Length: 119
Image 1: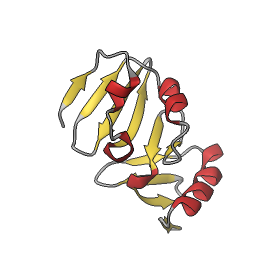
Image 2 (image 1 turned 180 degrees about the vertical axis):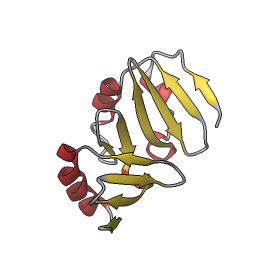
Image 3 (image 1 turned 135 degrees about the horizontal axis):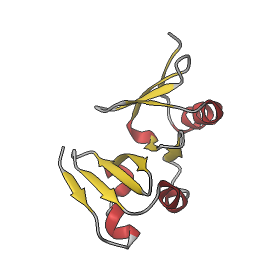
């Protein structure tokens, strides 16, 4: 995975023009945020996850699943209700906080028809 450090202060430059279809998920790391793109590129920004959350709030596809991650629902492969996690397409399994699980389940059900697992 290619890593790029971002120095831009402009959200449009950081996110890119087609961020709705290019960013799979964002990960907090203290005062930095790592953005994971479909192309396999990983970019680090000096903005906090909260700043990205505020900026992405208008886009229904992006959901905060815990204190560390924001995911693009277009790239969620599966939600495991029993283990409270979700799987990103060609990516990791991410833990969902208890508080966010019901909201996430409702939002994903209304957004698209995901695969739910009750293993």
